[in-house]
Structure formats: C-alpha cells, structure tokens
Amino acid sequence: MSDKTGNLSPLIYDYLLSVSLREPEPLTQLRKATDQLPYGDMQIAPDQGQFMALLIQLMGAKKVLEIGTFTGYSALWMALALPADGTLITCDIYPECRHFALPHWRSAGMADKIDMRIAPALETLDDLLIMGQAGTFDFAFIDADKGNYSHYYAKCFELIRPGGLIAIDNVLWGGAVADPKETDPDAIALSHFNQALYQDDRIKLSILAIADGLTLAFKRNSTA
Image (cartoon, helix red, strand yellow):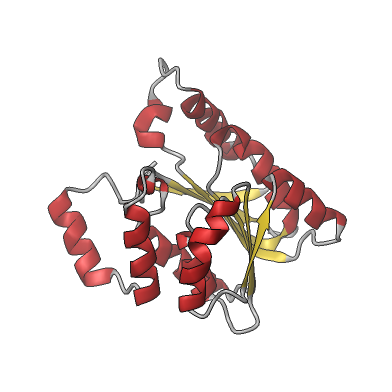
C-alpha cells in the first residue's frame, strides 16, 4: 500500500507534483484529513487520482464502479471527472467510511453523484448483475481486500461494457509479488492474480509503476 509513487526519490516526486498536480481544494482537504488517520497511507497517491480522472475524461465515461471506498478520496477524484449526468457507485463494508467522506463530497458538490453501498462488495456486484446492469459501466476501480481481487475482477468484467476499463490498485505490493519466497498471503494472492490477468486474452493489459502498481485492463470489443 502507498499514498505516493514510491519508485521515485522524494526530490523528483515533489517536483513531479509541483509541475503536474492540479488538485481541487476539497480533494486537498480530504487527502490531508486522511493523512492524519492511523492507516492513512492506504489511500491512493494524488498523481494516481489525477491520472484515473484523466482516463475517465478521455473515455467520456458516465458510469463508474469502485470497490473499496476508504475515506472517499479516490471516489471524489473520479466523480469530479464525470459529466453532469454521470454516476459513481462505490462499495465498502464500513459505515464510518461514509461518515468520513460525505462532508468532503458535499464540499465538492459531488454528494448527489456518488452512490455509496454499505455491504460486502461481492453482494453489491451480484445485486447489480441481477438488476440487469451487466455491460453498462464504463470504468471500474478495484482497491479492496487483496484475497478477493480475482472475484472482484470477474464481477467487474461482467459489469463493464466492451471498450471499458478496469483499474486495479496495489498490484506490485511493495515489490513482494516478485519474491518467490514471499509468504505474505496478500502478496501471494496478488502474484497469482497478476499471472491470471496476463493470461486473459479477453483484455488488453498494461501495468504501470505508479504508486504501488496500477493495472489497466481494457475489455476488448468482440471484434477486436
């Protein structure tokens, strides 16, 4: 987990942010509030949030799905990138996440655009599929418990339209995924997950060394 891109020196990373990051004030306030929490480093890096927002705008996305809300920082980045009629569904099991995030979402004028579902994410995803939402989402972001990544990915793949994009966080896990002697269950799960996506010919794949590793999985059109 990382709240900054860790493969750069502090000097270069600070420079990168100084000439690139255009973070609206509500996001800055939310990021600073998150930094004060005991597990504040679980939040995504600001340059990652801005990058995902750019992807959403480039795609012309209107419907976004997020697995893992935490303090709502990533949700807010994505919601701000959506058009006026866009919507974002974000999933988490902890009601306190909503209590923490909601004032910041309201401050940014995004509270009505973000639909937070408090339930196990797999249940929410199944509910969306039962409601006939398969193939209707443009973009999904997975950043939750690593042991369930393969399950989240399978459900998100059904929910994303052809030509849609799934982004997956923490796929390098501090480099532990590259160590064959690693015993950490999360690292092992992520290593297996990365290999499975590499073999998945239904997608076009790229892993970026931003923050703690970000996978982009583009769902191919049937004729692609």
